Image (cartoon, rainbow, N blue to C red; front, side, top):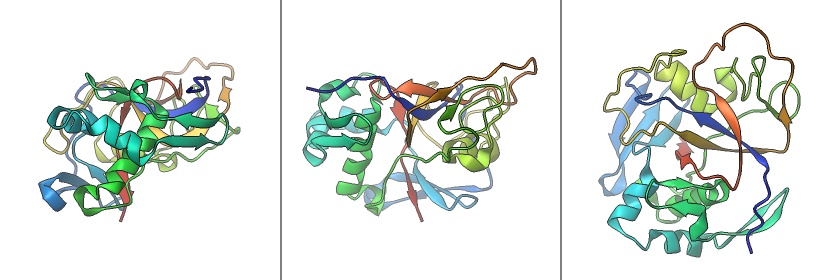
Length: 224
């Protein structure tokens, strides 16, 4: 039985139409003609499809069982052994639990998606007090995010030009962008709330903290 305890995982909340083209992002075609996006600034490659699970499921309804076959269980360092099952995936929206996200990127590596066996969820570096510093002062998953601490934050703000309160124009750089939270591969056990200031957030979209059993989207990345 899956242990559905609430723990915190760092993720990124994106506004609608929040992806845009930028000189540091280079679209390419990988093995089997799948779309990829290379970041020359971060030296990583993203899947071009920002809702890849749904795309794969729509073309092959057995993909969930294939994912679970590759990663039938995940040993969570905080909550023990988790069984990967259909409850970890919403095939109607392409959302997934955090454990499902881990299994999904393992599956992409297993099938050599785009010619790579190194797919993973993007990382976030814990800064400030240990844990998810979810506040106006927070620099890892709060309102004053240091984009050098997170790959998704750097992608959205530095490379795609995300501006506080203002969605940026949609472009062909990525496909199937979702106005939703995207998982990071960084798991933390504490949500830190300090006294909220009166200044406005520096960023309209921000990393947030969710239960790993919540369902949201996953964007895959690999190192170059």
